[in-house]
Image (cartoon, rainbow, N blue to C red; front, side):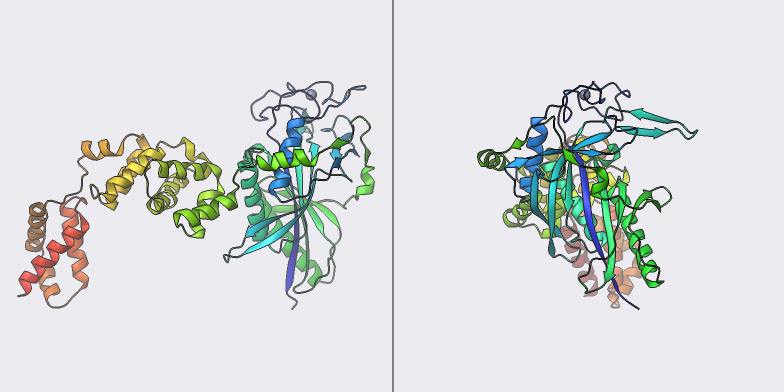
Length: 485
Ligand SMILES: [Zn+2]
């Protein structure tokens, strides 16, 4: 049986976080909140005789993305009309870029599951406008909301360099992270601000041929995209294996049913009859302006991850987790600024706080909204570090902080959670546990190491979990040794 290798390219459509639309001064509104068709004007409604004007902020944001992806910025840009009819496109054409896009020939280095990295080439990034939104009512009617029509979109197109659904996921997640760091997209896919299209083909592993590909449109979540690609790879392998071969097609994805839907055989660029947009002049971008935008780029996720490794001594996996979401990295650094030590803060954040947030179905980018402030986390870990509380108590206090907020030292004092280091109290607990468990003591003295752990647990229990573990262990060892002689 032939082994197959997937060949995958991704197109990412990212709404730019501008204040106004791409070619008019209508506000960009949240589609889930604003009443339909309230953020519209004659330009984005496609009335006859209107003229588009270019949104400089959108160009600026597109340039930031292009430069962050290592792209070349050509000196001339041209907008083009992409002609097709659809009810969510009132003009009958979309203003996009075709032959002369904003940015070309970039790359994104993705982290692979095995710890390595691979360079994925970015073919181009171009600006265009979004379409409106259709809602099909189910009784044969469709509702049109044009609030989204004309919202700036950046389409980022990769070369077909991805070799698995997992690599596509890594690319999508890292690209999303970069867009968030650049402040051009807030990454909330439930609001449709980031959408994917995947082109997929398969070929015998090791070959370099490019076989017929299909395109999966309108993927609205990374998880859905991964599932759709996996399904499509399986489908194509089956088609080749059974001798039918793959036909070029556009597919849709029904995320609820987990099904691919064949929509139509694919149109080619010539079907769109692209031609230069006559109502917009050529966009010229000077090298000086490019240099200025480059200068203003923030520290990006990969650089921040490397800095966390280098300066804070974190391992790469922890550093990657902490920098994937800008909000998490900011929270982490705020806890360090409040006096937290790098590794304990990382451990508690990744191990404990993420666990609590998962249980509440909170995404990690919501970390700024939880009741545990970075300062409280640092303070909690300082109490543990200084021995005022043990690690178990620290986790208990964290649960309280997470549920109620507040000050760790006060919670420890008010609830009597301070660690018991008093030798007399510990010795008394040890003596009473040994007196209550004569059989176990007997077994220990006969050489059973297993019961030592049990006795330790009993003493900690007697101290209501607050014993300083090392002092308890020492007192227990001492008492047992005394019984042995
Ligand atoms: Zn408008």
